Length: 75
Image 1 (cartoon, helix red, strand yellow):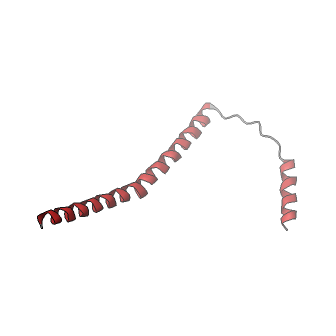
Image 2 (cartoon, one colour):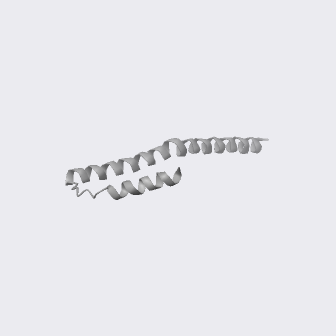
Image 3 (cartoon, rainbow, N blue to C red):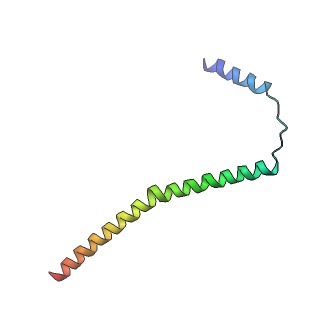
């Protein structure tokens, strides 16, 4: 089955001809803008779902540590 599928794909690749296509300046700028937007989305997702919760946990841990340090000093 795998062999038949590979032969089919190879035959299909041999039938394909190159598309001498031209991407104009508008299409190229649109593609570049889309790539930049995807990169920006990945960065925003990182900060939104990973960095801010970690930052809040650090603040909680530091405030608990300060509370225990201040209670030790008053005792």
